[in-house]
Image 1 (cartoon, rainbow, N blue to C red):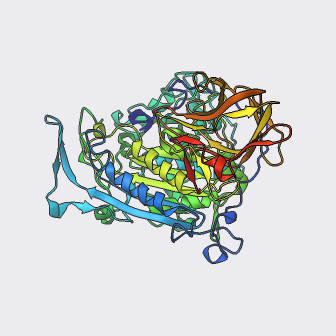
Image 2 (image 1 turned 135 degrees about the horizontal axis):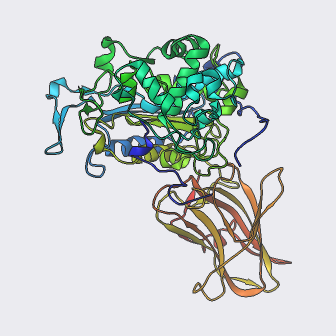
Length: 595
């Protein structure tokens, strides 16, 4: 069941448009995770790959105030969001390097016994039968399960048993009918096969008849011509894996991932003994559910996965926040955790590399979604990988900062229609992104634009007399939602009545300068400071301002400006290092921040 149907659209679907990959890929390994702040040999293996332990925000290189705000904001969604609670409860986990700096449960794992559709209200269990969330609460991961299937596939690619560009029909001859003969393994992993989002496999009474529905399914689009997220891709991949290995998917999960990594609370079809520690999901009844099942608790929520016996490539894995953090840490480590290696670094890189360059806004590695602000919030970069689940789950990994975020909520409890969008995921990601400090380029503070949506923040320098023209030099750091949010450098010669763009160039260490003829930047700058230079005209009473404009939906980490200095041929006209000059800067929405 696709989580997008219940929540966030892609940037492309929002009308913010930004050549499919072909041939050989030349890949560099992920940055060494051992370079993370405060990682040490006591918290990792002999090669410096960090393993996880709880620790302080400071040890993780994070700002504690923003982690506290992460919890505060998450708790707000236990109330009307905007009409109903987004979830009955959640487990939040965030960290950096080998340190889990936040691991916090909120709300209830089990609160409601039923949903009354006539009154659109929930029936609560008696107070003594409700179950509070705990750090080790087990969740139905829904579509986050796709990541496990994808990892299993990439393992087989690594071992030479599966070809990334191989046709699915070469492994499953029955698959090749109805126009599917050219669909490749890569297209299954990147949702470019042409399959529609889902079909009701649960309507077929036998397993063989369910397979016939897949064999007879005709793609909506020619393979490789469009991105369309589909459960059928990962169900088909499951069938390929089971065929080439001779093992069922649940056995592969256990032998290839969970046992080696010590993920003892991760599996398909949890035993009945886990039920008291498992978050309940939906009062599943028609017409909102495909099946009449009553309260689903301890069994997979997804109807198709349920009809497949609880083991499916697209849904069905149950896990805890800690176990998911172990998986995330393994991938950020380049495929290794402690003494266990489940993937080579080059294979992990395939999961963090965008194969969907032909479909801007739908960036996708093998299995992982990339650069999706709709749930990654300000953690989103071209390298940020993650996935969501329809039940209210999500995992986000940012190799750039070596940070990870897990939000596990039971947002379909008591009914799927109560939650909308991905606001809690975005809020949590924004707070974790803000918790990763940005050190000023010079001195103790830099000007920070903030991270507010639907705003226009301005930072205005005092009027300058440039008798012979001049040049602005400063340091600039930016990370904005591409195209939707931007920073503008503007000038006025009439006291601010009219403003014109000021072209500038930026350069980062070791790279050639880039021109910005429109006087603006948007997107991701690489999380490093850039040197900015702008030529200014010969004029009197020239006013310069920075304007940071955001839309109402999502934001990036924001913009920092530091060490601003304007000089003409023989004198310094303005230097914010001089207290008198700095005092004349007018800031609306910008603040002088230490990080």
